Amino acid sequence: MITHEANSFSNILVNLRDLRGELRNSAREIEEHRRIPLNIIERLRGIGIFGMCFPQSWGGAGLTSIEQILVLEELARGDTATAWCAMIGCDSGIYSGFLEEKSAKEIFPHANLAVAGWIHPQGKAEIVDGGYIVTGKWRFASGSPHGDVISAGCFLYRNGNLILDDNGKPLWRVMLARPADYLFSDTWFTTGLRGSGSQDYSTQELFIPEQHAFNFSAPKRQGPLHKTPDAILRKMAGIPLGLARACLDYIYDVADDRTDRINDVKWRNSKRVQTAVANAENQLFITRNAVLTSVSTLWQALEADAAHDDITHWRVQSALSRRNAFQTARTIVSSLYDLQGGGSIYTHETPFDRALRDINTICQHAVAQEKVLQVCGDILLGGKVEDYFI
Image (tube, rainbow, N blue to C red; front, top):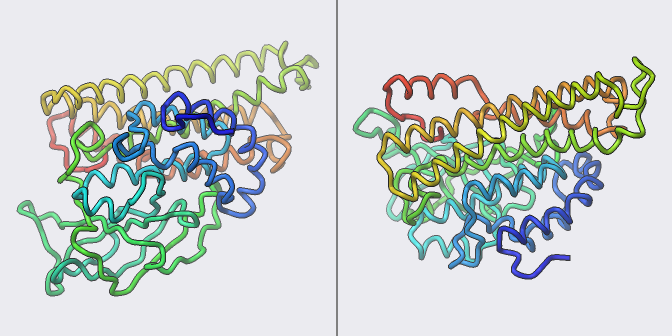
């Protein structure tokens, strides 16, 4: 049952806690069908998940980046793929802030529309009168089976020539269109995150009106979600944090029922299990607090219109703590997988097989890669912020 005033942060969390058990029970179906069931998508819409980044004036929840992290953390405690699709889908509210309001209303007539697609510029957008002719193929359209709006990153061309900015860098835009404008290919047969439906998609000579494309460096809406382009990434750490927490939840739930064969005692009384759990909790506590502290301080700096160097510093700290959340969650899940022993290998006996596959898959995302360290180190040593998404 969805509570009243579902758009408030507290009510969203209450409703998600009610949904957690249903997500866990649906995990097998989600994996096997390789998409989120429509009944769960409609539950997410009703709770206000896809509208949580829209301002309240649009009928959205207007959540801060910290609140978004906590929402995704709660979702990931139920199902990682559902949380991933929610993380992508709610970017609709962020994208709308880079469009003129009239154009944003054309694309997003209400605040509960989910976006899907890849913003990395892989396509070609030829500039023509009134807009662009777009051709290309993209990957990783998470949530595409239920997406209402599809995003596609494109390099800009004029008369067949790539357009460069004053620094010699290619210009690019994110194009927004309807799913019917693209051809989707069911390529999503993966190690983990199988339920996200992250299909490939393509189009040939699609006309996109100029007002339906945007540039992350030119926001039209004020506020911390639009002052810097990293807002779409800030919330991502909630997913590995929630997944690690779900694995610990399971250990606590079965601690009285399982026997540690090495010592022939219940898990709850096993020194080996006690040590493993304490170590995992310590790692998760430190990692989670680094995420929340860095993102909260960055949000405050953006709200206060702080000096550029201060904002850059906390963007770097946010990026580093986010990467660490992914990598530490992988360490925690792996350690609990080993703690479980032989039972971990069975697909449906425990959550650990799926959890290990999911965490390894999401750790292939760019935010979890070693390049993040190099880019952040460059900035810390005096370099400029040249990567949009740290």
